[in-house]
Length: 339
Image 1 (cartoon, one colour):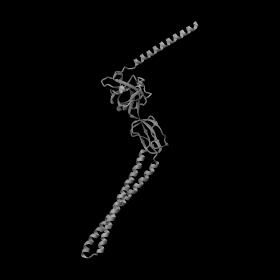
Image 2 (cartoon, one colour; image 1 turned 45 degrees about the vertical axis):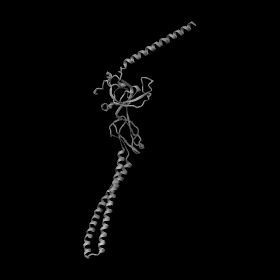
Image 3 (cartoon, one colour; image 1 turned 30 degrees about the vertical axis):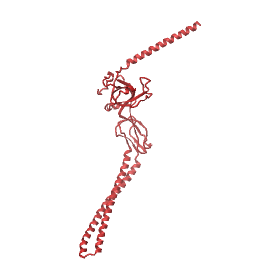
Image 4 (cartoon, helix red, strand yellow; image 1 turned 90 degrees about the vertical axis):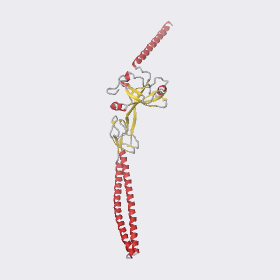
């Protein structure tokens, strides 16, 4: 019994010692973390997030075969740059047929115009003969029947002239229709050149050359680097004091102690939402948060466009009170960037 009691006593002492060491370790870690975390003045709040941009899908307007893709994943692209091309064999045949119809319609217009010239000449002759016949009938040198024939010839010439004009109008409308057909097929051919509407970087190459895609089938996905932002979540007490346009700073995890990127609040959600699991908050009790978008200025993005990468994590600091000065560690800029 004595040896058992001694064993239990030694076990108890060991637990107490282990607990004391654990508490001391936690306290030391907490004090170290406090010493490493910059002090933030009242009026400045922060949240963690990652760099994000909009994704733009490059897809054909019509069903067809992918003829060529001119870029690879990771390539930088400029607005209106051709990234891929769809096959145009069928469209080429259709536009050739439409051009032939246009040429035929234009030839018909030339023929109709020539017919009008002929009808004008016939009408002029008929009017002259009628004019000469009228005084002869009055003097009795020409019969009334002959006058009636001259008038009938003049009326027939007028009708033929009107018919020729109507035919010319119809042929010109046929030319308009043929031109519209050519433009229609040319527009479809132009649409086979898949262009990017934004400046950015190719994120995914989703199709291969020779593959047949339905209308809207994705060929490429491009990251729009013209607008780079970070989304953070703030509790209602902070979001209520925040306004669009408020100054902000972004510090990336990879370079926390070196540089801060100036930014501005571009969006504050009108309603609270449940905080996403990947977002860390200061208090687990803060379940409902307001989403805030912090945007990096376009000119600053352009200055470092080759270095911009989505998914990079960091912390965005937002100033609720414009009279509060930024701490020194949030005022250090990348070399060459404006203060």
